[in-house]
Image (cartoon, rainbow, N blue to C red; front, side):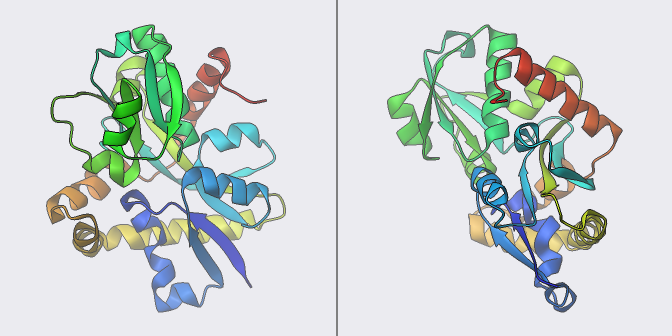
Length: 256
C-alpha cells in the first residue's frame, strides 16, 4: 500500500500527523507531504495526493471529493492564528493584503468585512510578512504560525474565529481531510482518527518541540493545541460548513 496524503506545515496540524513519524505510522504505507493549504488543494486536483488536509473552501469547488468524517481543524471561538491586522478601523479600509495560503480564511474575512463592517476593500495577494503587507495596504490577513506570532503593537486586530462566533453563533471549521474519488475513504478515515487521538496524547511533547521551532513558550503552544484548537467534526461543525458555504454564495465568492 502506498498512499500519499498532504498536511499543512503549521503547529495546528502537528497532532494530526505526528503518528505517521512513529514506527507504526511508517509501516502504515501512508506518506505525508507538507504544503500550504492552497498548494495542497492544487496537488489534490492534480491527483498527486490521495487525500489532503485542505481549506474547507476547496470542498465547495470540488463536490466530487469526500470529506472524511471525524477530524477537522476547527475552533469554537477565538482562534489566535487567523487574524487581520489594521492601521484603520475595519469599516474604513480601502485595501487589505491577503495571505493567500488559505482560500478559506480569505473568503471568511471578506464575508466578515462585508456583513459586519459594510466594508469591501481591494484585496492584494501578498507573501505572509506583516511589515511588507502593511506597506502596500491598510490591513493584512495572516494565517497559521505567522498569524499567531505576529506582533499587534499599535494595530487593530480582528480574530476571525471570534468574529465568526459573534456573527453567526457557531464554531468555524477551517480545514478538513478531503479524499479524491477512488480513495479508500473508510480506511483513511480510520487511520486519520487514530492518528489524531495519538497526536493529542502527545500534546506536551509536541508543544515543547514546536516552542523551540517557533521561538515561543511551551505554554503558548500547549494551550493552542489543547484548548484553542478543536479537532472534531460533528453536527455543529457541519452546520458551520453549510452556513459558510451559503454566505460564500451570497457574497459572490464561489468560483462555481
